Image 1 (spheres, one colour):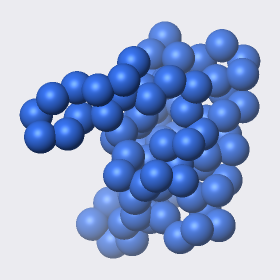
Image 2 (cartoon, one colour):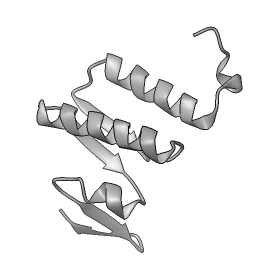
Image 3 (spheres, helix red, strand yellow):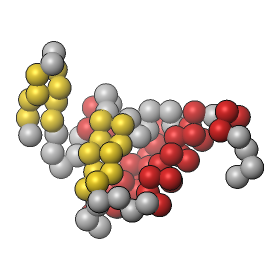
Length: 87
């Protein structure tokens, strides 16, 4: 807790940002590439946490380029060449 943000790794900063967002208990959680800077094990933990929160009623809008992560979504919207598909 005494580390300066500049001394943290990208994954540590990402986990801290997720924790800060969740502690606020937002009605809508916006997650932009939530696993982007994490190793696969930490990413899996975060995705499991988001899935559990969603089952408990948390609304989550997640942006990802990872097709495996996108498969976890209940609803998918694709932005391709400036056009929106799906929904």
